[in-house]
Image 1 (cartoon, each protein chain N blue to C red):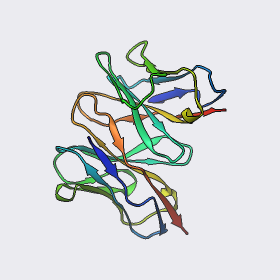
Image 2: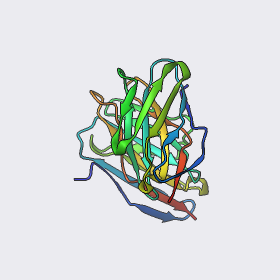
Image 3: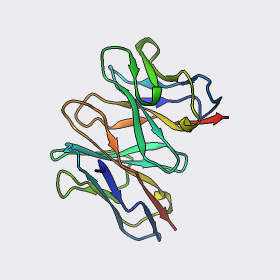
Image 4: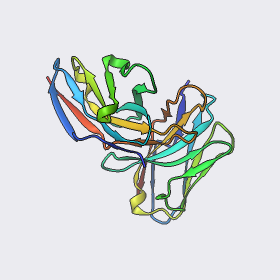
Length: 113
Length: 114
């Protein structure tokens, strides 16, 4: 009965590769997010997405792109991976109406060699 | 633009002692405010949140926080710390619009001495 799940939990890859991280929420929420947590534990928003609107943090390189096949999924695609992309990526979701609380997934630790 | 400052990077307290973690925010209007906890290797769990109304909010695990508009603060407190409270604590502010992307502080690592 996991609320927000991410796969894989760990991802190790070479520089220059293209990879994807998947996120699924079974909460019936309207909006999903991707956050990046760097090695110093600093958390930064990357994207906010619902079926009407994608909001991109302007500091995110265009090598990163969110893709939503349906309302319950928001996958993160990363092209031409760089060493600096190594981080923990968290997916989150929220219902627009009512509580403004975001529920977070367990995170995906990406290591770029 | 909204921002959050957690002035203390590390805090060490003895088990059973009281705890206060500081959080200051910058936002143009009344914000949504949150405290999340992250145990090592884990995701983020919501401790408590403030949207409106009573400025003293109660959360899980015996935590509480007080919203002080005049000081732009939302400090987290617990009267008696348990060893299991050792973790990283994040304060966050959310804008009151549909996107509501959270802006996090840098986090405070809490260590608990036996």
